[in-house]
Length: 386
Image 1 (spheres, rainbow, N blue to C red):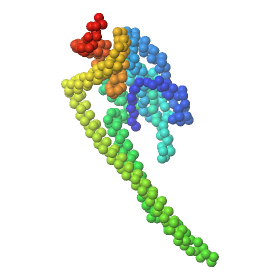
Image 2 (cartoon, rainbow, N blue to C red):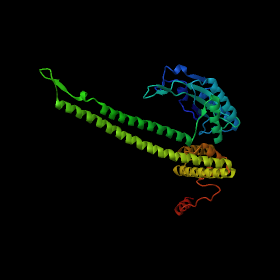
Image 3 (cartoon, rainbow, N blue to C red):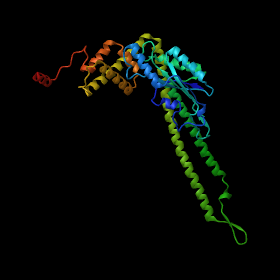
Image 4 (cartoon, rainbow, N blue to C red):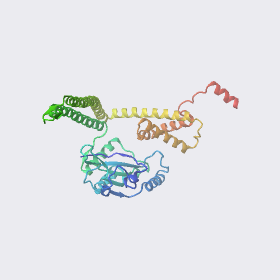
């Protein structure tokens, strides 16, 4: 059985969901007593502690776009214990600095199989963690390799098989879809064959209508018998045509999925080759990294220019307000363009680039570049106003 772990920003209703403070229509209430819970801090209390510590440690307020509390859903086994999850939490803290302060094991979620009506449990645990770096007071920053390590640690602590991420996971999902479509395809073929077999094996005697005369002799009622045969053929033909159309539709779906899976296999192969080259050659890695960060910087500059064009007369004299506005622009640009916030953090580490971006937002140009010339009519108006 495979497991996986993936941390995301905690939701506002996490505690209500995780600790079953509300009733949800997708759970089995008879299984809820089997859930297990552990809580060191409430989310609101931990948030206040994080903000206070950040101010004490760094001298600055926690950024508005920071996600200092995050939550992960972890796939578990039927016999996974709370102690197993505490062991996992200790490893995450020791090796990655992630401090888990809430755990909820859910054994009451799942679904009934539509064919067998058998209950299929969705066994999982919620881990809510403090994402603050105790050394700096800021949020933790991890390298992509450390997220892979996180999966290894989880599989090891829970004694389960490691899940597969990225394009491979997408590939696996599509393979599963193809398998399901092929099963449906086969079921339809069998259904058509069953109808044909039933048609050929139907006893003629069942369709023949006989009536007895006044002497007790039976005679075939031709008109009623023919009507029975007509109804039978009409019913079976309609059923066969319906199944045939559905069969053709399933065949097309399978072909489409197969094309997609072939494309994904090529994509996975290319990504593997690219990753191998990147990690084995420092110069290529550095070059690719620079190209990516340059691209992100270009996107951010466009966003800043757009924001200034949209609000040209906004008061940007206050430094803190200017920093907050830059943070909001970074967050929105990250969401709109599917860019990790860590890329923006990396760019803004360079004080020259950060200063240039702040200047671009405040004045409409970067200090290290010449101020754009005014149009003649604008110059004339400025002079007249003096």
